[in-house]
Length: 373
Ligand code: NAD
Ligand code: GLY
Image (tube, rainbow, N blue to C red):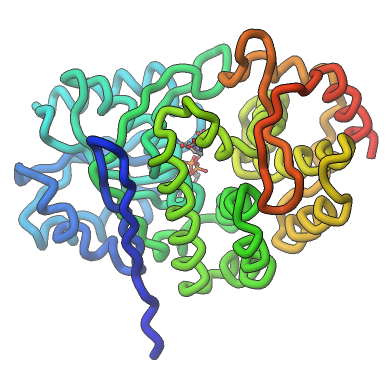
């Protein structure tokens, strides 16, 4: 029987380097993996109800084998958990656990649990440690790496947060076996993103292997997670706090995507990754409109999104709004800089760049045309 290889990638952040380990079966070795990072025999764990239902017994057994007892905080699942109220709950839980600065809390779950727990860890005792054990494809390829942590507020998504790097990331692709297919597809949008940013060969790879990855092929999953994490590690090491424009490339599709998420109320109507898929499609088609990119390249992206079952046009959303309304959502974007909104556009597949000359009125007109397609 072929053994699926494992991978380890160093995220080389000055003063806070850490490893991302990727291997099927890691979850059953969790105790052994975290033991060098945990000073006490009890470990606070934050998760959500879906992940706890699927993985808590295995995690408890793996920790127990290394003499560690998990102390669990199990939160409701979903984007609304990234809130002030649950941030307070996680902080109180860590304080009740007597966590010290050099201790770690384990975030077991998707991007919601990782972002929330990481943010709480950045604040409690003015900063304590955390370990990410991402259990969605999106979290394994993106959110668990790079140290962006946040909650949402009434005014929008991720508006309050901090940069706080984890001490270790353990990504077990086998945990994706219990993830709903729609969530797997949504996470895959972030995989395609790395190909579009600066790695045309990886986009070619996605076209060939994407369907197998989504269907559960372990080798394809390890390869895609490792390649995505390596890309993210490289970008984050070059620009940890998104100051030079390099890390901003990771936001490809997010400005359009966030507008769509806002219009659909950050609800199950549109998952974050689905918003990113549509956002990348719109960034590509807008780049064609601006004469920056060949229409064939945008068509290739649209075809690949459709081939893997991701949304590839606005029509299916039945938004019933104007392009101007979507553009208005963009005014709250965190990337807004002195009244202008930088946009990630493309000159081709693997050639994303930051454009600072985009006129939101033109974007609104473009979106009107897209909504009418
Ligand atoms: P999520 O955390 O809500 O997880 C999606 C769903 O899958 C939830 O219902 C969850 O309970 C369930 N789930 C998770 N793992 C499971 C498993 N193994 N088996 C069964 N069910 C499982 O969503 P997500 O897509 O992982 O993350 C989205 C969030 O990540 C958003 O809030 C977004 O803003 C954030 N994000 C952050 C970064 C970053 O750099 N920090 C990057 C991208 C996205
Ligand atoms: N997901 C975008 C970033 O980490 O910068």
